[in-house]
Length: 347
Ligand code: ATP
Image 1 (cartoon, rainbow, N blue to C red):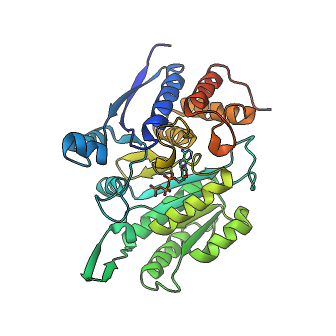
Image 2 (image 1 turned 180 degrees about the horizontal axis):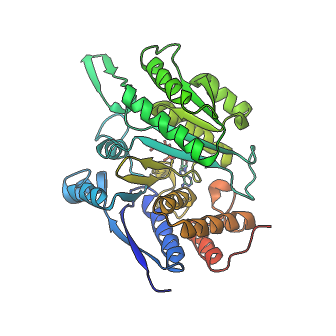
């Protein structure tokens, strides 16, 4: 089919498993788009240690300009050195483009057996503040301090994102997750903002849970949660926990949303333990691309990709090792491409 419209997307393949999963995703998105007359122009940039080697900058100026111009990016994981080195590329990009809402839907895939079937919950994580502000210093040797920043503006806008989403998509319940019994000022402010926003959405049930209890409650009965609304650090930790309900980090997608720009990336990191071995599961980044296609109003292409992913999971023959299969990244990607070419309706 002739290309009717082309989307310019900044592509950050990342490092670790990033290049493998990104290559698979680009192939699949292009194939799905081509069948509907949708083209993509990928503007590709390195970030992190790879970029530093080539350009002397961890985030090249051209990458910033590209995201600013295209307004949409698809991003693989970029390794953040532990305990030293450069600042997290992920956090820096989220702050730079004020991508304040981290949207992470956690949904079971058909055919994939897990301990908790039919999970369908969403995490709305504040993405620019909290202990992630990175305001750390050593007061004297042996004493370090990290500042937790919570603002009325930041808390109100993430709460609004969650409630507006719930209203638009018919979701019923929002839990604000906090530790305001201990962090009375910061988490107390976060909760006050959530409560105020909740007043304008009387049709949505609003509840509050303390974060440690939430971990237990999630494992006991995740079905009690519909939308989780929380701060940056709790959201990060709860996302990994929730990913286990649906089969692990290889599956869960994410979107970093701001007023102007959006960066789509999986919940998982660069997984150095399996990098370069054709073992990584590209589903999480592929489902992030599905979120991106919805964001670009390419609903038909988004639905085609999602249906193809689900077909491959229902058939269960070409799954990667993390979800109990024995296929490699490229075999899984080929299976999704085949499913795109020969769709089978779900029974
Ligand atoms: P970060 O802190 O950067 O988010 P992380 O500490 O959560 O990273 P990951 O790099 O996400 O760690 O990896 C955690 C575990 O999950 C590793 O054992 C890794 O191999 C596995 N894993 C992560 N992503 C995938 C994937 N796409 N496919 C298969 N396994 C994965």
